[in-house]
Amino acid sequence: MDRRIFGVETEFGISHRPVEGRGLPPDELARYLFRPVVEFGRSSNIFIPNGSRLYLDVGSHPEYASAECADLIDLIANENAGDRIMHDLAVAAEKAIHLDGFSGQIYVLKNNVDSAGNSYGSHENYLIPRTTHFRRLSGILLPFLVTRQIISGAGRVVPATDETEAHFAFSQRADHMWEGISSATTRARPIINTRDEPHSDAATHRRLHVIVGDSNMSTTTALLRYGSTDLVLRMIEAGVPIGDYELENPISAIRHISHDITGHAAVRVRGAEDHTAVQIQRGLLQRAQRFVAEHGAHHEHVETVLELWERALESVETGDHTLIDHDIDWAIKKRLVEEVADARGLEMGHRRLEQVDMAYHDVNPDRGLFHMLRRRGRATDVLDAGAVTEAMITPPATRAALRGQVVSTARAYGAQSTVDWVHHKLTDRPLDAVMLKDPFAVVDSRIDALLDKLGDRSSQLRERTLDERRGSGASLALTDRYALLGEPERDEPPLI
Ligand SMILES: Nc1ncnc2c1ncn2[C@@H]1O[C@H](COP(=O)(O)OP(=O)(O)OP(=O)(O)O)[C@@H](O)[C@H]1O
Ligand SMILES: [Mg+2]
Picture 1 (cartoon, rainbow, N blue to C red):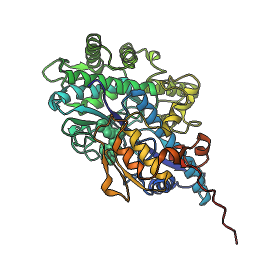
Picture 2 (cartoon, rainbow, N blue to C red; picture 1 turned 180 degrees about the vertical axis):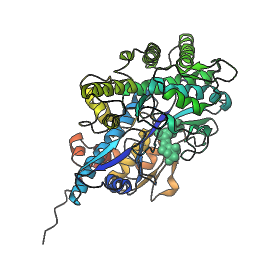
Picture 3 (cartoon, rainbow, N blue to C red; picture 1 turned 135 degrees about the horizontal axis):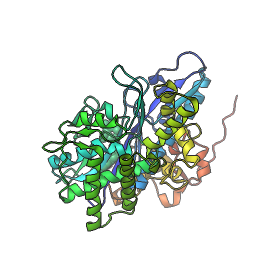
Picture 4 (cartoon, rainbow, N blue to C red; picture 1 turned 60 degrees about the horizontal axis):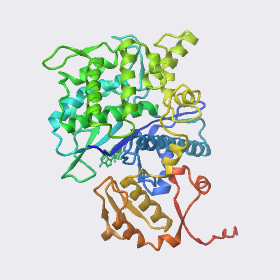
């Protein structure tokens, strides 16, 4: 497909560190965190004006599901808006717990393993044509995804166990995958989830749900992760021959690869010699380069993706990690961990280095180590300054723009809306529901007609300024885009 819809769901780890004693249990903390969300949307599962979804499932890992995007930079901006929203919620929650007599700080981590060894995910969604042959898709995509960690893993300080010494691994998530392909998400944790919910026209499309990825702090790494996957999908869809790297055992392979930072760990390929992760990735990259040379780049980021991909593989192959230690999460983190270890004379197994690993993923822009590195010029960024703030309040140019319009306009009129990825209605007009099956569509006359029922928008609504919005919600993302023109100033009621 020349144009594709992308979305990414991020689950966050949360914790409370009081000045002394035990912290609040995660479920209680999550309730504090989501208080402004519930105030805004009367539920802990809501769609917000930037088109994305915020929700709290059972358990205590709040999730941000990005709006559907048709451009990779839009996707990364929208994803990072989610990190910022979670940070805003943490700031508000910290105030709330202090008012309730608790002390200390709240941490929101965009990582994939907590200190107790629980794992939570970063799930990617790719729109693909229904005609794609699933057997062929998985035969190519699984080896790609199993080895992708060497170019886009988030890196992990792995503590010593009875069998292994402490070491640095490519991936956070690799040890927590249990199956290659299946329809169950949480229980079986497959690399590719086949649950068939396309959020688009089911006759023509599927939504491919990839569960294996590490959450990325680096926007450059994110571009390589989504961009390389898109290129592999594009080749599969075009039906070009892509080499045969079908793995005998994807799950043992993914773990084996993660724990050998030299990239030389060999895995069994069905009916062929053993291959290293670098060899498999090289084979796929060469195919992709040839494919782009023959068919042309299908979007403006392709060249950057190919350059990063090449450089990341060269870095692993040669062991010269300085080639990517500003661009790829695992290498950025590894350099930091080694610096701390050297400066303090610590062995790899030291607890302090695990803390550095965690702190790398702190979404707090002032405190998080990744954010500090970026400010010091030690991590590249593919987003323009201001792009994340913008993405907190502006949906991408897809169906998400229509969803955002419904949510914000209804709120301006004091009406309630009920929306999901596909359905849109005003809650008290259930018969006027609008179903938007085309995720690329940015205009739809049925949505206009629906919103016109609320009043004449052109003469009654004005867009709020950024300053007004900044002053009126726990997070910029949880504020209304519009206000009614000439809204009567309400007098403060008398105190007595
Ligand atoms: N047609 C589409 N193709 C690809 N991705 C899509 C499409 N429509 C929506 N998305 C993306 O899919 C993701 C759906 O997130 P959501 O958390 O609702 O996932 P889910 O897998 O359906 O449900 P859950 O996480 O509750 O199990 C979002 O990131 C969204 O942007
Ligand atoms: Mg989800």
